[in-house]
Image (spheres, helix red, strand yellow):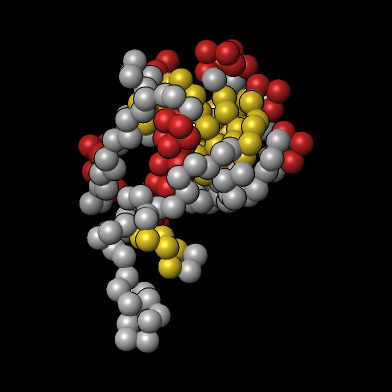
Length: 193
């Protein structure tokens, strides 16, 4: 496995809690969503066989895409970029008109920016930018901030295990599912590996 592919898999794995948090938020607000299982390609040359068709799905088949950025924001006033990154040109083309919303969460999960394609697609444009994760140039679909809805994000069920299952067992600032919860040592201090 190449180092680039390993880094991609790690980023994909780290994105899961944000997807689950948005799914929980949508459910809390009365929406039904399905979050598909993530499949990890064993090598970069097999990525097309493992490409997902969306982060989550509404009952009508529409997709909700989720990104979690490493910077905090609360509104357009403190959004850390000049424009709003929707997705890569290739992914937007592949998903077509099947996306109901593109959502970006703040690093601290306190806010979200949301673009609704049916209300804004005519204002999208392609820009060439360097991807901060890979350092490679990529063609991205973007829009100006006036076409983004910013709002507080009420993270309802915020505790997830590293495996992305709901974490009911808290130890320090980490949460664990039943399967991965640490067992106490003789001293009464949880043993975390």
